[in-house]
Image (cartoon, rainbow, N blue to C red; front, side, top):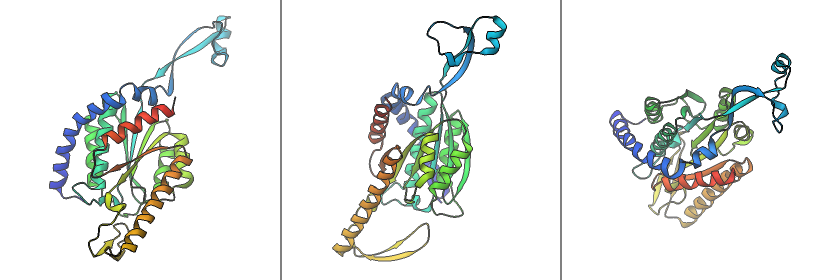
Length: 296
């Protein structure tokens, strides 16, 4: 878990992200956000007399019987959206080869998406998970909710550090009744996503944000290195000067990414990979534009 000084420094940076969030709203969410994510529900508005061409399924038989003429129920589009940020805080998210860890990247994404939702008048909720879901903040409006969510991501210290994505998906399906927009933020090292992810994608509009670090794709030639799995504690010595070892690592990493992408495609879930070392806003912007196109 980051020390208090690190958390405070990151929180200062997060407050500055509000400016970047407004830019994201203007460039990627304005119009596209509303057309892609809004208006998925209907609220009852009023009764009125049936007119030629109206939907027969909206006839209200009780009012019709009372008034002796056909009456229908009319609806208005529900404008408010609930955005759920489901964030993986397992041990592997503490890794970062440069100045930013995957956990800190997840915190920044929580801020960016939270502020973006706030600018559009939407609620944001938070789910933190590792081996199991262990914190859920129901959707609410306001800056206080966003900043608390960011702090919870940064300071999370789960008892069991392993990743269990199916458990998180099952929790959201069971606990979030109203159809929502779910951003699933994880390094997806639990590659057996299976049916729970498919069910989540059917129940809620789901977008996967894959947290990555350059060292997870390619090893530098720095001699013998001890690798420790942050989730299991297992240690392995790898001779990175061995070209065959580096090649095998690259192939294994590529197979993992390709397998993950196949699962997302199979379940119809939009996704993007965001690196700890590059500006993620252009990638996020492109993802949202693609998502809009695929939904029209």
